[in-house]
Image 1: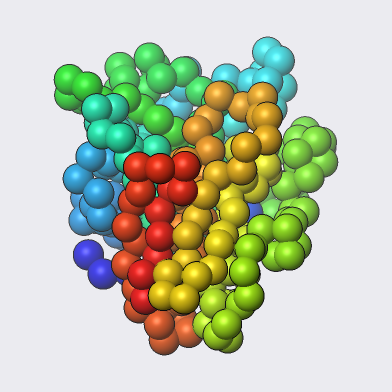
Image 2 (image 1 turned 180 degrees about the horizontal axis):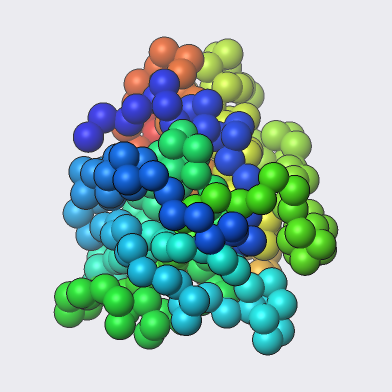
Length: 259
């Protein structure tokens, strides 16, 4: 499946994480399109997405008790990885963000949830294979227009709308206008606790992405966050007319974008 840049690139700027939902079930045509994206967007064979049309009430948990918990979502998407693959984390981030951007393009609300959910509850609703793990999930549905007080507090705790300047994320000179567009798209990528761990290094014929070395209390892999930023970067490059290919690296660098 080719990246639908005309749908997903604008969705980067529309997407906002929502934890409270109205309970309204999305229209069947939208769910059919989202389910199709889950089946067809498989850029990495070791990661798959599954739309689960069941209540995720037992799947989500809160920061303390029910505080910070996802509420009212009628269904969810699970991102499932084959854990024997050394690139499963970045693959899950890249793949999952594609599904989230497709949901956004369809007018649906979502939220990456990697820490505050019960994998065993998700597995009870999904047919997993040997070696697979549910790495993350997202609720799917419609959120109220206004954020609840609890959502506003949670957003404030992680400063969800605040993004680091490119000067702190990029090493090397931005040598072409398309790079600026791609890097700005990557800068807007969501991450666990909004930690934004990706760092870019520009070289003559490639752009490298790596994870920073700072301490994070989150149990979610920084490489998963980098996978999300990788998709944003590629969409920004394509929107500027520059195709390229990500090559996953086994070193401390996560991947390099060859253009």
